[in-house]
Amino acid sequence: MPSGKVHFDGTAFVRHLSDITKAVQKKTPEALRALAEEVRDGAVARAPIKSGELRESIRVEMQPSGRVADIVVGPVYGKGGYNYAIAMHEGHPKVIGGLYELGELSQAYSDGPAHYGKGIGVKFLERAFNAVYRSAMKRLAGDYADAIRSATRGR
Image (cartoon, rainbow, N blue to C red; front, side, top):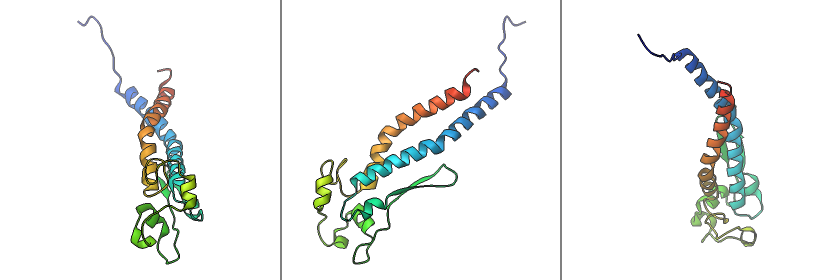
């Protein structure tokens, strides 16, 4: 005969996990949009400036599910019909007519050395994504922990 017993109800546990899943799913579209907008803002700040058209073309497009965000650049075309957005991001000197040198506006507004960190130049979208990603995981962990605590309060 046992001296004590703990009863573990698997049904209640599964229901509890379901509540946590719902809380995380509810938080995801909002958190994802915020991250995508942060990447967009970083890309805009790092994108070269000539007419402003490239920067204006950078946008967030959310899929209807709310679980997928695309940060879209362009299209922006140069005088020769080439895709200016790709040429500026990738730094294709043959396409843009020689060395990739930043113009006066880009140099004036750059917040760091050209093509690095927060500076204006090549890989403006990729560098923005990498900068946001480094800090985002910690922030998201806190956001989701709050949502889980809220879903499990009183249990």
